[in-house]
Amino acid sequence: MNESKKKGVALFPITAAVVILIFSGSIVFTVDQSEYAVITQFGRVVRAITEPGLNWKWPIPVQNLQRFDNRLKIYSPAVSEFLTRDKKNILVESFVSYRIKDPELYMKTLNTAERTQQRMNDIVFSELGVALGNYDLDMLINVIPDQIKLNDMMEQVKNAASTKLDDYGILLSDLRVKMLNFPEKNQQSVFQRMRAEREKIARLYRSEGTEEASKIRAIADKEKVILLSQAYEKAEQIRGEGDARAIKIYAEAFRQDPRFYDFVRSLQAYEKILDGKTTIVIPADSELFKYLEQPKKQ
Image (cartoon, rainbow, N blue to C red; front, side, top):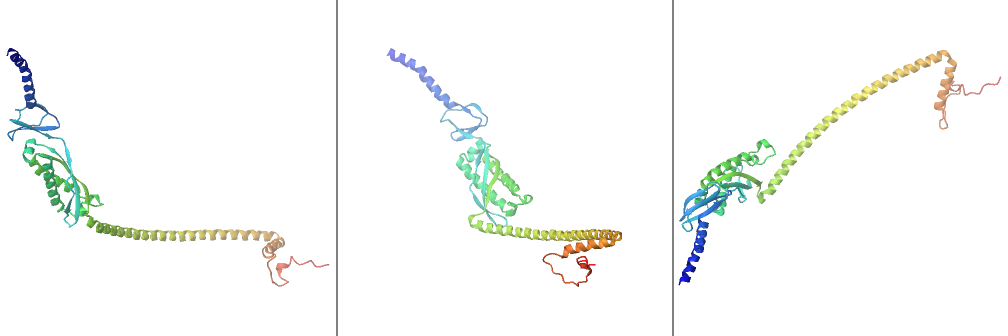
């Protein structure tokens, strides 16, 4: 018996240490900077811890600890079909960035990621439907930047959704549209209308180009006529001056030696009209052939 008591006394410190470790593990805990902690007592929230560090609580089952990630999260609601103010059906794909702001309120209202996403999907769907009903399609999709109001619309949706999510302890950081598209059944008619509009614009550009080309061609033809007339006038002037100078030279040569001048001019005429392919019929006593006659014998 003495030996049993001695063994019991020896095991008591070990057992006590084990019990203390077990209880200390359920009493003392740390909260990371990327999370929040909520302590409940018999299902009732007694404390929410939002700062990182070492904390304590009563052991289970008196108090329980639940942790929530406080980092920014991204969620993409399901692609949904909406109707614009001008009765155009469009498909909208959006995304939401959010984080838990009030862990105690979040735990009381949503508590799980599945319920959070479901509630967020309902709110975004509702607010997008209301906002799109106040805008025409060409205010959301347009080639003219000043006419696009998509960012303004999404800012309104974000503010409205943020107010509703605030009741669930969620801070909405941003809400944006990833894609705007037409339902499959409407795409073909939309593409045909777009093609017709582009062809109309192309015809307008072609007609304007043809008109502009005609103007340029008319101006070029006018300038061509003016240049040719000026060139002809200049050529005639130069030709007249040349002819006058030639006549003057001929006259001076004729005055110096009329017989020699007559002889040279006749030779020039022979050179132009007499060849092996030309037949000339003129009177025999023509002055033209006086230098071709054989001299008479004395």
